[in-house]
Length: 111
Image (cartoon, rainbow, N blue to C red; front, side, top):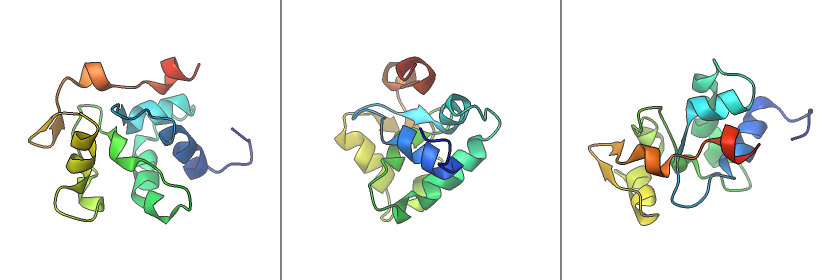
């Protein structure tokens, strides 16, 4: 990542690396970027991701418990859940099932 990238740009670069069928958390991205206490800022970046020219798979970013806390920022009633389910991720009552299995940790995967 370039030093000149702003925080949101860095968040988008990491989010674009999340593999199909996997999820990560706001906090995991923040920690990877060296800003462990900035999970909320990652959430704000995800909320703004629809304004990016290059697609950002924001549906793959959830809270640390696997809850779809950002779902109200997606068009449609259950679009975030539908996108995750189309990738084979099981969601029950707005929560990712088997989170440990589908969790992608950028600290481990991008080191």
